Image 1 (spheres, one colour):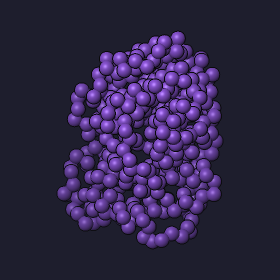
Image 2: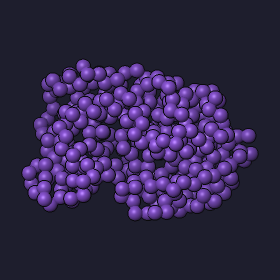
Image 3: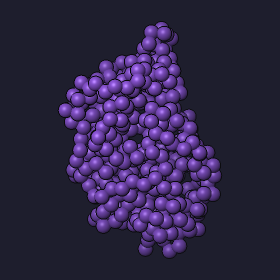
Image 4: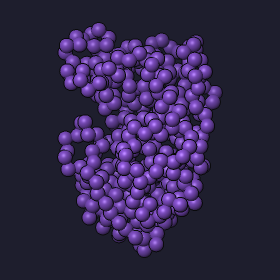
Length: 361
């Protein structure tokens, strides 16, 4: 597969390369041309195939997948959360195994035995999902659990992740505000009581699609994100330990922003659906900006740094000054861009994404 041109001004939100990636808080998908475009002004893309790229806080995987498409010599992804390992195994380390029509047919016809009702139906039906949607999720998770091929198992678990978002009115309502729609689907609430906005923004149309049609669509989307590339690895290390243990030429650092959402609590319901045990201890990076000093100190063995951050508690000038304290002889440049991660729910009009590069030579 040919890479996406990094200079492209076109939004990458709907590019087929990213269709296999699930929705993720704080994702950088829309910002990739901006980030890699600035990198290219200092390190020509012709040099990228000789460089090892470390994505220190992988999250939803968009940066790692983009780096893989750009032909870096190796993509080294890291995140403490086991949910991220699903993406890594299904898409990043997967260079040639799609979900085939045969796989889908075997699933539809499967006779996997699991306790009925399953745990998703028991714990989350009506409160989060309609009963029929919860039953489908239990079925997909049961099918993922019995796969002998680890790549196929990861793909089916990523299928489960996508369906969980498709079976609520909009992705941000997972585990929070989908109950009225689940009750309407289960016949426990009148459709007239629902927010009329959901009739006009297309949310309900998606929610009412047959589950089998949703599964076919997700399979196709997953396969768009599977392509050949250089070696890719995934680790679940503390960020500071990873920097000391992982040889790299470029490190992308996108730590949780101080004063923003706690991923561990916000994604608790998703982790329950996926069947992963994510530690509930909140990342220290969400508490204070002082931890950025430790991060930069730990990155001394990596020649080139890319750091992204929000402007909730730091200005661009503050962040540039902080990086310069630790950058040594590296050239430090900074940029800011108006940006909302969740534009449909955010009320902040002054949100900015901050980008600081500290580059060798």
